[in-house]
Amino acid sequence: MSTISVTSENGVDDYASVGHPRRWAILAVMCLSIILTGLDTLIVTIALPSIENQLGTSPVQLQWVVAAYSLAFAAPLLFAGAMIDRFGRRRGFILGLVVFLIGSCAAASAWSPAALISSRAVMGLGAASIMPATLSLIRHVFPAGERAKAMGIWVGMSSLGIPLGPIVGGALLEHFWWGSVFLINIPVVLIAIVAGRIIIPESRGVRAGGLDVVGLVLSFAGPLLIVFGIIQAPEWRLLSPAVLGSIVVGAILFAAFILWERRTSRPMLSRAVFEDRRFGGPLVTIATVFFCVFGGLFIVTQYLQFSLGYSPLEAGLHMLAICTAVLAAPIVPRLVQRFGLGPVSMFGPLLVAASMAVLAVGDSPSSTQVLIALGLMGLGIGFGAPPSVDSILAATPAEQSGAGSAVADVAMQFGGAFGIAIMGSAAAAATSDGMSAATTIGAAVGVVGAVVVVIVVPRTRGSVPAAPAGEQLVKA
Image (tube, rainbow, N blue to C red):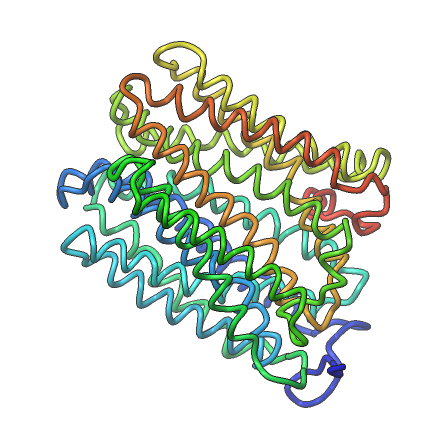
C-alpha cells in the first residue's frame, strides 16, 4: 500500500495547529479567483444574443459556447485535484490562472463560433486547476478551529460568482462589445497570479506510485461523448446513429471508469471515500441542484432579452433574485444539526424544481414569474450546496483534499453541463413554447433528485462540522 504524508514545501507539516500567518490574505486571493471561475460559467449567457447577431451562431453553437466551459471545467477536475495534491497546490493554482488568462484573451478576440467555443474550453481547463487548488489550499493553511469559517466564506463567494456573471456581463454590454465579458478577467487574473506567488505557501500530499492515466482518459471521454450527443440531438435527430452512438459509447466509457477506479491499485481518490454516504450522497444533491440552475439560467437569460425585450443590463439585474441563497445561510446549518443532512438538503432539489414549475406555468412567463422562480432557485442553492460541500470535505482525507474538493466541483459542473445540454436541446427542439418544454424537464429532474437524496444522503446530524460554514459566513 502507498504511504501518504502531507508536507509543506520546506518539509514542515501544514498549519493544522496555529494556521499560516497570512491565511486571511490567502483566503482573499482564493475567493477572488473562485468568484472569477463562477462568474465565467454564465457571464456569456447574457451576451448570447449579441454573439448570435455578430458571429452568426446557430442554436446548437450557442449551447456549445456555454457548455464548452462547463464541460472542459468538469471533465479533468478529479485528475487535476489529484495532480495538485501530488505536485503542489500553489503550482496548480498558478498554472490554472495562466491557462485561464490565455483562454480569456482568445475568447475576446474570437472571429468565428468555432474559435469562441475552443477558447471557452481552454478557459474551462484553467478553471479545472484553479477551483480544487483554492479549496485545498484553504484547508491546509487554516487551523481546525477557523477552517469552518474559511470554508463558509469560500462557499459563499463561489455561489456569488454564478448570479454575478449575468449582472457584470449586462453592465459591460451596455457600453462595450460582447468580447468585453472576457477581457474583464485579465486584471483579476494578473492580481491573483502576483499575489499567489508572493503570499501562498506551497504544499503537497506526497504519494508513491504512478499516475492513473487510464482513469484520466475514461473520466474525460465518457461524459464528453454523452454531453456531445445530447447537445447535437436537435440538429442531427435523437435517433440518428451519430447521436445514439455518441451517448451509448460515452455511457460505456463512464461505466468503465467507475469499474477501473474500483479495481486499480492507485485510484484518483480512495475507494473508502466513495463508500462513505457523507461523501457520495451529497454529490446527488449538488448535481441535481445545478442541473436546474445552469439549465434554467441558460433559458431565462435568453427569454428575458428575446421574448420580453429587456436590455442585457436589465436582464442581468434580474439575476439578483438568486441572492436569496444568502437568506438560507443562518437557517440551514441549525436545521442540519437538528434534523440531519438528508432531510434538510432534500429541500435544495425541491426548491429548484419549484422554480422550474413556476416558469413552466402559462404560455409566456411574466417578469414577476421569472423573479419568483429565480428567488426559489437561490433558496435551492442555499439549502442544497453549502451543507453538501461541508459533508464531502468532512469525509475526505486531508492528504487527498485536492481530489476530494474536485469531486464536489465535478458534481456541480457536470450537473450544470447536462442541464444546459438537455434543457437547451428541449427548448430548441420544441415546435412551440420552448420555455415550458425545458423547464418541465428541469422540474421533473428536481423532484426525482429530491427523492434520491432522501434515500441516499445520511440523516446523521454530525454530517457537517460543528461550526457550520453557512452560519460562519453570516457571522463573517
